[in-house]
Length: 441
Image 1: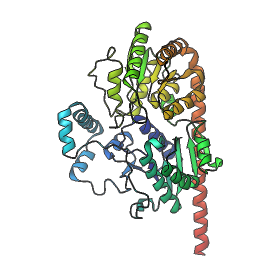
Image 2 (image 1 turned 90 degrees about the vertical axis):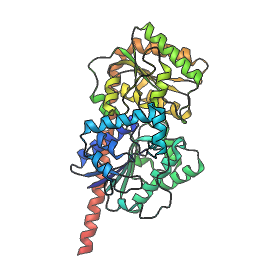
Image 3 (image 1 turned 135 degrees about the vertical axis):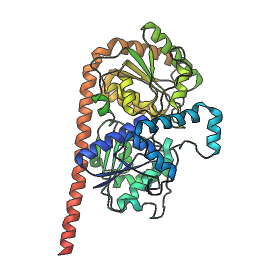
Image 4 (image 1 turned 30 degrees about the vertical axis):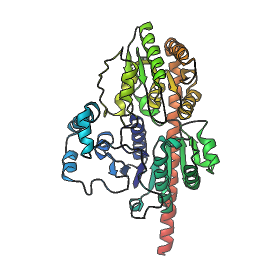
């Protein structure tokens, strides 16, 4: 059994995306013990840290290790702890030492962005030859199938199309869709997505109507919630923590103005004093187009040093454990909220873009009043945030049982949907074997 996994973003620097990939790998390995798992990535050494049993393919679907240079071979041989330490040192040089970072960039040793189209539509069959002989092609979770990540989305659609043409079973898991209004992306999605064998979505409202408008049969679509709920639930603490967790995202698809940063900083600082607690930073992404660390430093310098260094390449489980120390989480990034709610901890989502308002609204729909949305473009955003923090603080224990029950239900739905995927693949294999036997006769 050979399975190819398509993360959509390839630099392995977003811990939310990595968590989704890890869950997909674990669930697939449980369904097909001994299967060869191949993951498309531009960061093979990071894949080794996060998913040691997976095999890296470059975004053009070539074997990363087949032509590895001597440096790659040496790095690959290092113990994981030493490898992580060296990669963390590289991150410090690139991001925290400007002069050294410029030297590395000029030398062509800059960090991969993960945000460009990795294969063109209509590429030669050579590019997709790695799909030959695959049994299953799985696009793992995120929200790259949207206008904000158009190039990534087009690349994923290219590979889904190539896999389907080769008779490979295709699936998309843990997915958020939209907005998709760009004419080119919408046209490609309408041409490719209806042929995907199974699509598992993480939201209740936005994805299904959008997929229906693109011609996808509703029978092929199932709601599972976010796959990262499972590892967060598994690591839940026995009782609520005492801190306020803070996650933020500043990106083209999640803009935050200086004024909005100021009101978030003020509300958090006042809340920490009022409730006699501390703030815990929860950076999710160190991709060059996101850099959560930098915006977090701007938000709460009163509560942690402005020069705070937080390891960038720790596994998702480290962030989940940090979330477990919190009584509530305030976040402009999606996965700190998921990690919190799955552990029975209330979350407050901060959003200014349509994409993020939709993402957090979906969590509100799934988890109820324990998840709140504060729109940063609201003229009363500061007051609403203060009120939301106080409400979540006071009701944290009362929210916990319902949140944990919701997490269990999401996990059940996810596992059931993966079982359906298993049945699809096995059914197709039986038909292939039967046809081969008939042909042989």
